[in-house]
Image (cartoon, rainbow, N blue to C red):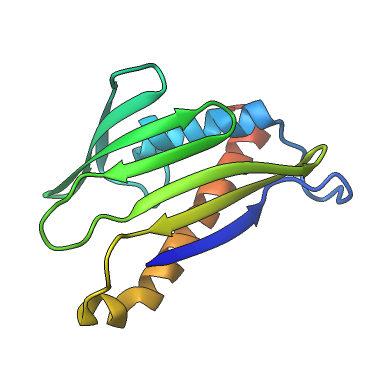
Length: 154
């Protein structure tokens, strides 16, 4: 299974979209890694610690009584790779967020969700809903980052 989408962060030709630097965007993405509960659609809480290197985080994420573990690899100002640990009830879905800048000042975020193996009949039945939820979650994150930037919090 693979689902991918692209969100435009900045557009130098559109004065209605506030400019954001690559480093501001990266700082905001790090909040998603280390404190995802700060986002409206985030978990109830998250414990994150540095992993085997400064470019790795190990997290325990809590949604009510559900708990998920993952490992996050950071490629500063380039890419973030979320690698969930297997858990009961669902196949782990990996997420890669890549910062793209096809032209100076034109920033995009590419979100690529993937899971190994074939989808079960149940997973196939809900896949469209999952994709819509992931898209809305990512749009909400970008809206939040833009608001934080407007308030001077990035």
